[in-house]
Image (tube, rainbow, N blue to C red):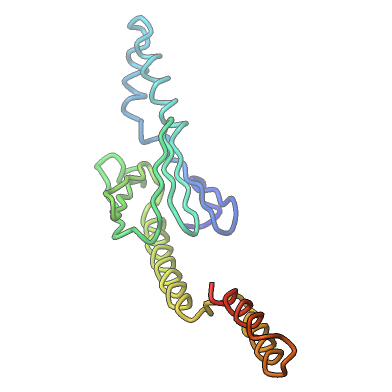
Length: 182
């Protein structure tokens, strides 16, 4: 997916905002146009599908995918993604847009009406792999972090030095030593 793609807007180097192609509701629009003379039923159909299309958004960040539709929002962490599959119907294949089905640990979400969906699916899979690698590295580095804040060992060594030189009593030494254990 390139930043200059018409259906994708790059809002920062880490976030892509996608909007479904309007052609996803082509059949309801045509049906609505044909039913306009029938007491405004067609206008209602056109308005309903237009408002549904306007409220549908997908955001891909460096750590999650957010699917917004009307008043609902679904958030999927990239590290939970198992697979991405692209599918087309006869109509969507003709207009070069499709649906990306993202399988994740808790189920699946569908990103419908995505123009040229293969590069977007590849981007999502690469981002998911990178996020899993990043989390794995974070876990590995967490094992090597010191248990005490920096400088604690220096302060403890200074305390031992004062005690060995006789500058603080045994009681004060033991009392200060307990502060380092907690």
